[in-house]
Length: 526
Image (cartoon, rainbow, N blue to C red; front, top):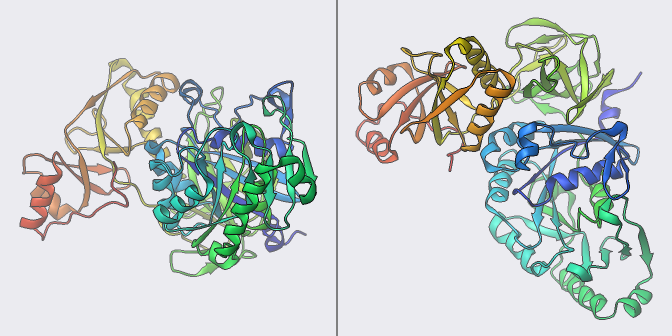
């Protein structure tokens, strides 16, 4: 009989965050290659069973736009461990989805472009990780291309993120002169050989330092100077500081050519903490060996167009999950039979029979499940609430075909439950012309695409004047509704949001009428 805490010790559950185009999706694919989930092909990575190589970007709109929009869950074995990789959207407009996914992780890899360093979305997502106290491993990617000085990049990480970077390897050469990496933990020089389009694991040769100096010449000497400087600065790894979010181990490499991919995978096994007892809403830890419990961190509909299904992704927090077990859905108190439980890799899925703390299970047709919900067996548990981001962009949604009104209402409700956008309803209008509220405008493209392609409901999204939102209460709402430049609408969770045309009008109102309830949401949109 497996012991949940022992199985949890074999798990590593982490996410990847980055600015768009830093190489996050490429790194994800290479992890699957090294984990044996993807097999090498002639010049390109091919998935087993003729799956698409872009395993993580499965949505049609993602493939059209070349960006990650949804979050995907990928599980693969590596070094007798079970790695759960939660791939997240890279675009800033989907930060809210990333925040929810990070609620299910124990660490994150921050991918930086070696020529660009810290970019705006990187900084924003890092702050989300810091808020959630998630340890960060840094991967400086694209070292096979012209880029910046490595010491300059380290300084930027420290100054802009207030995070001490500790290089665990050091590059020998850069761009087209990139020869390999020196492992600072043991001094080994790992020389790489390029493979066609990175389709195979990069051949690795451990080279004696004396031979490396003779063969690599000035490149080797430059690398040694960098390492000596790091030693003088006492840049060494400290596990406690890493887990406290004060320090980040840094790895250089090239995901495209597979240089350094194995090193960072090894780091996820050796450095990242395994799942630990999760703190419940009362501030008490739920023991790993307690009866089964989990938290829903994502809901996604229509992943399988043939069946129009709805999948609730939950992270196992304690105990052992067995397919078919009956769990209790905490918000409703209703039992739910887990007959259809899947592990999901992109759009591909397999039936999962068992899962342990740190694993992710997709429950099919869990129609009542919402993000942040608790499920459990025997001992009731509630997890801390997953907050919403402050929207900064607003549209009024109207159907273009009145005969499709039912599909329109159904689609809007579904996207609301998934958290694709926040749907606000004014009392006198309701579902006829709901207000869609988003962190970024690209979310509206997703809404329009999915309403038309998944629900058959052509829609127009009309820009409106609102620019700022605040949480309010019923007493304040009565006063606000009579003011110009202000609207009050309700979210599906019952929360009332006051919408303002001008942030200056909001500021003045806060000063003149401090008795009104106008509470900020978790983060201001930008």
